[in-house]
Length: 491
Image 1 (cartoon, rainbow, N blue to C red):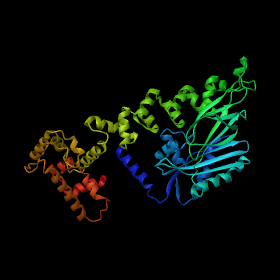
Image 2 (tube, rainbow, N blue to C red):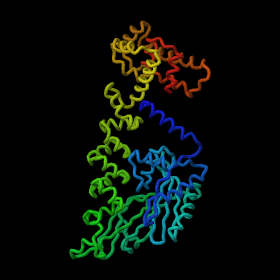
Image 3 (cartoon, rainbow, N blue to C red):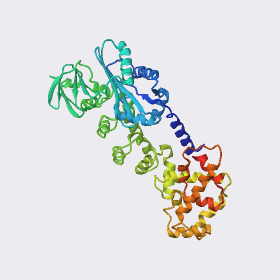
Image 4 (cartoon, rainbow, N blue to C red):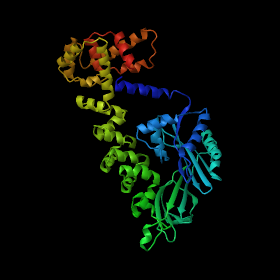
């Protein structure tokens, strides 16, 4: 099976999954803080079970979801923002995405769940619960929060909150210079940027920029560094080795490390082995790159210059690895992306563009026409040798005929050539369009007279036939019935 045909079949299967009255939805692993060894997948599994019980939604299988994301170079860890959820949703082909976070502080647990519309990027439904109790008692409130969100019982959450905690506890917190209280604290904020400052006597100040978003609780977890006058400053408050030394970074880098929100386990297991530095990751964040892409961008060897180039061109993050690994210029890749081509077809389409001098927008129609001609040759309706000789003897640049469905691109000189080739003296610039339309009308009349064919909007299919198809049909005397059989097999 050719790669093009395989792609078309996959597309058909993808569309079939959407021919249902149920809304397709996928659930991301929840972000967790302060839950010990409780895996995020276990919490999201509870929500998935509630989605499965609902007759209004159709859930994407977890295994299939993981395979697609792994193939596209996604890491679910940290994908809790609405922007990230939308990017994942587009890859999965679902209508809605569910994400959430659960944070624990002692016996206080904060649960936030949200449903995001992939098409608009808007948060449609949210549910928030504050639970005080044991960690094993989270199952029931999590189910309640999920059901409240799915049923839409709760009103859309039009509030944004900051939840800040510090180590040591009790640090004084200011927002844009205004004191709001001591950590831990949950505080309402507006949907805009803030500078959060935490101060504690004997510790270095902690500063972080946040952006309030409606329906979300922004979590700030500050690890304040103790200030010491002696050389013992390189050790922890307990007198042992500082965490930064265990992580293999400097004390200054450790401050930035904490601001980046990287888990220590992820740093040791994932980032260090591939040679990532705190400075590089800070650059990634400054470029607005979601952290789910950091590992794969580093593995792919995408330089900061290349990242800036991709961003300036407008290439979405989920295509950056494919652009790096492809054999084509980034701008050409962007054109193919906007024209709907998947990365598996980029090289082939770029070769077509380069060889025939056509644009990415013209490439799909060009390939479609070539495919139809190839099928006519395979069905012995056209002799391949005679077809090659016909193209060479035509004497004009005919490649634009492969994408022209109206005849508007044909010049007077080219009309003269076609008139002589077809031995039709009545063919001229004024009659060309009507000749083409008459041929298409004859195709439609032939189709209407046949029995047992239901091909949807046949008018559109026939009107998309090109000047080159019309010319080939005339030259090789192909009947309407046989030509229709050919285009219907490709439609």
